[in-house]
Amino acid sequence: MTTITKRPRYFLDIEPELRNRFKSLAALQGKTMKEWLTEAIIAKLEDEIDTVEGLASLANAQDTVSLDAYIKTRKKGRGV
Image 1: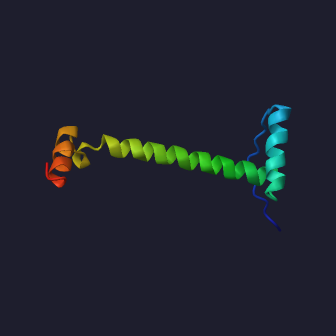
Image 2: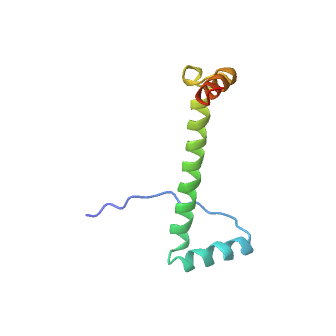
Image 3: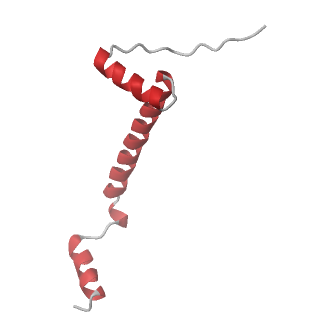
C-alpha cells in the first residue's frame, strides 16, 4: 500500500497582469510557475536571513571599533 504525503497548498489572489508577467518569465526560463515562485520565495528568505544576521553582527560590540579608533588606525597606516 502506498502512502501519499499531503503537502499544504496555498492559493494566491494575484492581479492578472502580475500573473502574466511572472508566467512569461518562468516560461522564458523553461520553468513552471511553481518552480519560479519557489525560487523567488527562497531567494527572498535568504535575503531576509542575511539581513538579520548582518544586523546581529553589527550589534556585536565586542568585534567593533569606534569611529575615532578606526580613523586613528587609518592615519597611522598612511604615515600621517
